[in-house]
Length: 374
Image (cartoon, rainbow, N blue to C red; front, side, top):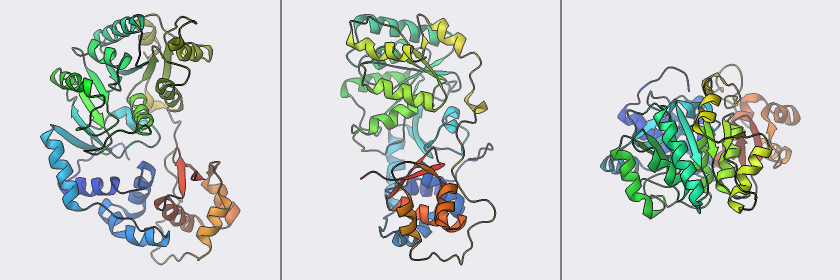
């Protein structure tokens, strides 16, 4: 999306939602469709032909279903925000695969540009909870918004300690499926104190195990840096730290006893270059010049140079098979795929779009493509 913000009309918002909620249309595919066809309406009209070519017809959700979701969100005091709009969280624009639409409630008075993620163990120790409260409270007093995932333990402590100064909870499910149930009152407290709830999932979506890494990429993507307080060697908090590194964000860790398994992950991060944290001042000093908009880590989604795809472009029957044969589960640059197969850039754009819609390929950072596992 370009730097100039626009506000979607009600009809455009419905079309964006219909396209986003269609199976196999992730953030990269969504933007490729808009680049290819110019609008969500035109992309929806073209989908039957594209998906038929890939041998897997797609069903776009109805306009009525999209309208029902928007009406349902309004009953929760929530709103859909598009990536092209001014109130879309700025830092998300600088991550790979940013969601084209997010659902938000609250947050109108938050300074989304000064934000720090705090994550950690669900079975946190008393010392970990105390440290989290101290860090979150001091960061809030210094003008930072605290971002976390509304989980038990460290997340809960971070949100509660920053209620008065502003906190953002990223949900793994829909607004009506807050997890865990015991934190539903906390979610209300966050909104009542001027904080925000945010998710990319639809109403009614019950969070599954694979949805939590998706949530974690938003926790890190919303933040200038991420602090890990306590984490086991294999944990969601370490996934968040890895995602933060991929997004070129700062990673901080609170050291702990080598005898406590809950400290293994944080200590491991410090051993591998994370900034050691003993107080909020360590974080504030490191983030003083942080600005994701100055980073150019992520390339825009791949598309061919030059004019739009000609209307009369015809694909050869063998083009899809040749591309699939050339691909493996190791991501490659599209230009390399073009050179290997001899298929022209515009034809390659259509082939990859069709294969993506059929669930046969997946994108990495919008520039690399691979055959989907399984």
